[in-house]
Amino acid sequence: MSDTKTTDTTSKIDDAIKAAKARQATKAAANGEAPAAGDGTSAAPAAKPTKVSDEQKAAQKAAKDAERAAAKVIRDAERAEKKAAKDAAKATKTPHMSKVDKAAEKLPSLSKAARSAFDDLTTNLTATDISGLAAHLTHFNRVKATGRALDAKLNVGDTVRIVSGDSRYLGAEGTVAKAQRIRCYVAVEGASKDVYLYNSDVELVRAAAPAPAATGTEG
Image 1 (cartoon, rainbow, N blue to C red):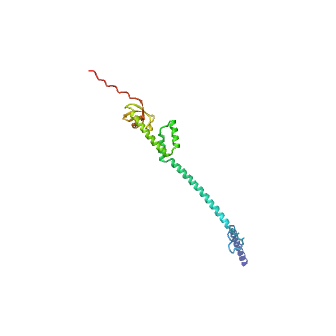
Image 2: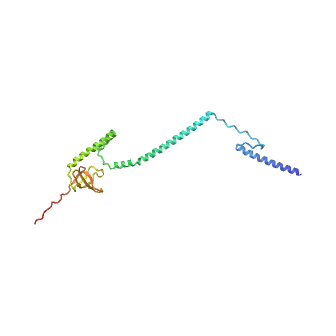
């Protein structure tokens, strides 16, 4: 009776071990692993990997290289676009250009004839010719202004209108504070100091009232 009981126990243990090994083999097969040795189970041989030909390898490499090259082109284009935008933004904030723009705002307005001549000259002349012409015009204007200034007669107290010279005061009226042979100082409302001009830079609006003549007392 004792031997029969021992045999039944051993049989149950063997069955449990086989079941455990079967479960391990099933799990290994699901994971693509070879079954453990001695587990008493058999598994289908693993499929051999398909061999890639040299032509396929070359095609795959070429495709990857093309993909990398295309990505590089896109990156370079994006960098170039960002750099261009950055340079453009920097150019608009250049201090020198800001000063030039401010100077342009102070330029006097041109008549229709002067604007037409300016557009024609700046369009058809080279930069060298324009520079030379500007120098000649400046000299010509100075010669004419000096000549007119010698003929102009101004007196302290005269009311004058500024017609040339400092563009900030063109068209403004003021009072002659000091008169010299070819130069004058004009007091203009809003100016921090008298404006220094050629006599030819102003035109007389109203002469100062003559000082009353001195009269003697009868004794």
